[in-house]
Image 1 (cartoon, helix red, strand yellow):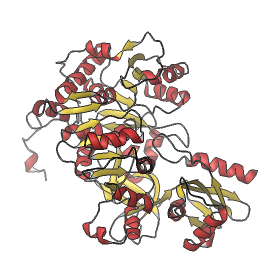
Image 2 (tube, one colour):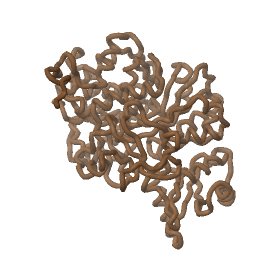
Image 3 (cartoon, rainbow, N blue to C red):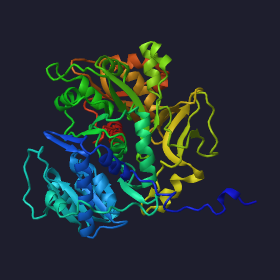
Image 4 (tube, rainbow, N blue to C red):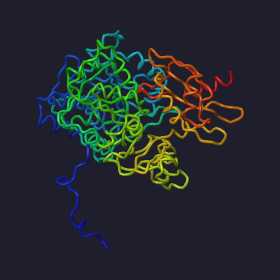
Amino acid sequence: MSNPYNTGLDRNPANYQPLTPLGFLERAALVFPDHTAIVHGTLRRSYAAFYTRSRQLASALAQAGMGRGDTVSALLANTPAMLECHYGVPMSGAVLHAMNTRLDAAIIAFQLDHAMSRLVIVDAEFLPLLNEALGLAAVSPTVVVYDDPEYDGPRTPTDATDYETFLASGNPDFAWLRPEDEWDAIAISYTSGTTGDPKGVVTHHRGAYLLAQGNALTASMAKHAVYLWTLPMFHCNGWCFPWSLSAIIGTHVCLRQVRAEPIWAALAEEKVTHLCGAPIVMSLIIQAPDTVKRALTHDVQFFTAAAPPPEKLLAEMKDAGFDVTHLYGLTETYGPAVVNDWHSDWSDLPPAKQARLKSRQGVRYLPLEGLDVLDPDTMQPVPRDGQTMGEVMFRGNVVMKGYFRNPKATDEAFRGGWFHSGDLGVVHPDGYIQLKDRSKDIIISGGENISSIEVEEVLYRHRAVAVAAVVAMPHDKWGETPCAFVELAPGHHADQDGLRDWCRAYLAHYKVPGRFVFGRVPRTSTGKIQKFSLRDKARALEDA
């Protein structure tokens, strides 16, 4: 039987428009044209100017031949130009490819070729890197150079077009393009490529629209919130916050470099209400000299999405005026799509218990339709016992379109009608999920599975441990055994015997690391620990 409510009630321009976050900026400029949208050093830019410049960028790109489906790459720091790219590039119909500024030239060349980039907007600081990459790439994109006034380093001579000149050539009244379909691509972001070539994650206007609003709801962002850019905008498009801030007519405080002094200055002087980052950013804030720290007159929301912060770091952040919330997600889910939603009565629990609760990844964002931990073979949910491990899986409108030009990887990622994250986790009786490891990071010793995260959590409780990372080391008898890489906190000391005794007090004997290696623990540009590098080091240590 046909549905009578569908008869003669069709979509038309009056009742249907494809969803896109680009309209958030248009509305902000219409309703609050004079409100400060962007702060960058001495620069203060209103929403009216932000919208006008974004339209000019879209117009200039269109005049340069960019259109629907073309790729425009950006190799930029957290600057106003990067914010303008998040609007101006898709307003032209093109797809934004924000590149990690800390990658080497070979990887950048791979991305430019794979994404078929036709134009690159590059910060003057990174022009030598881009030139090296272009020497390796097959594509020959047009280059536009952004000369940031806050950059005080050397400039490379170039005959490429200047960003401001390029922008000025555009029409400030340009009739920007809405997507023809809300499932049209808005951006492509590349995975880290630790197990092969990076994969191009394609995201769409609908998902960006939904997650941008989901951020505002999840982060309890009031109208005119002030957001500090400690999270790289090239990382999952800044978790969609470039679009979130326009939805709530907030203020972007740009930060070219993540350093303690400008962070504390912005917190105090700009009255920052929200910021995001890995635990290393928290450590940077807390370990700043007293001469740099400022007394905060308001609470600041800090969102972290890497390894669970140590209990002592959470306590120090709380004392300094920060409320830390743990998030979880992947490039394939537009950034975080899971939140450790805090219950008010949990705040009455002892600090150690609170820290254990905060270490859980949590429950799904409002825009995410499905989140579960499933047996990857049977695709059935694991018991809600906090013990049985399975693979964390997602489904819904904030899951990527797929991997660009990689149907095999796309089909595998979506096997069984769920997005397979590759993360192993458990579900607690209250429905909150908790990660136990990446599938490739699980340590199998004598047939027993060892969660590297569990061992790391024990190490983080030791007052001398600032950073801990545990990987598998080959073992003649047991196959594998844990190897711990440890970065000590300033002014503290620990040795192998002391840390081994500490672990024995909290872990089963087979989970205790067989070796401890002291020194700086390598991280990616977004603060994630480079476990692939540590696994190589562990194998080398065993072979030595």
